[in-house]
Image (cartoon, rainbow, N blue to C red; front, side):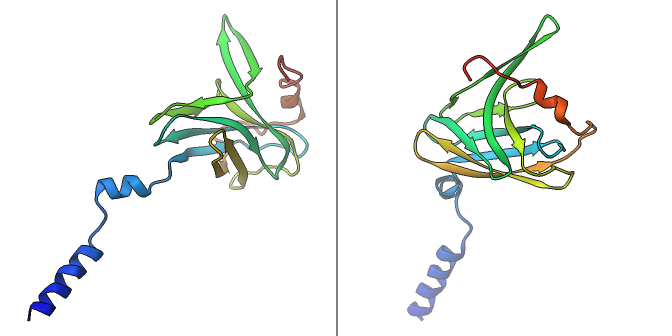
Length: 164
């Protein structure tokens, strides 16, 4: 009878859902939340948006690559006095136990020289490379979100920038 009790106790321990501490320990340290982009024409550029969530020590996003674009750049942007200012960012710090937001009107990923058109419902793959050596594979959901598709003129807004 004691063997049955021991087996029952072991089954309860091994089949129980993980505790919050266990779940936190197995959660990815770096994750992307709400990754998306808008439709865009082949050969043009597309901006990518997401929130990087870091559940560990500080890290630095150093580069982004995508098989769907000739290259991917990290850009910062701000609006002041009715004038939009954009610049290239070579590295983006991701604070310990914090997050970094890439959003319209601000920091964003620029997929330069799209190899195929992006249509609503498509997935845009990207790989983020961090100073720690970690990589993060992300799929950005393509969604019009009420905005028109970006054509070739969008690339004109992202011509040569300081530091590029």
